[in-house]
Length: 166
Image: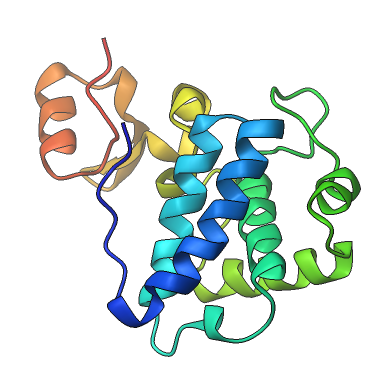
């Protein structure tokens, strides 16, 4: 089930065009988790003022959004599943690699994103994301999964970790 995503009325048509491309691409070559994160990224870009999505081609933005989510989740690493080479992703969507990479870098800078960024990690990869579990306790950085249940519950309540570990 898809989340309800907030998009400004002015940007709804552009959002829908981009999401149609990203959804189709993810369905054919990736998975539903990628599709969902691409929708969320498109919505976030739609809410930016002014929205960068208002300039350039829809296909360029769709490619850049997939490329960005792929970068964060190591899509280009052949040991990962799913896996695509950057060149292959760009060929499949019909955009030059320089365009997709350049716009992806713009997105990464705009939102201060890095690989392993917890907000943009595929849910199925969250357990393996070390950044999602690091918290500060009394000035010490620890992995919340090794903390007491009480600390885990407080970290979860504060939104510092994605869920309560078993």
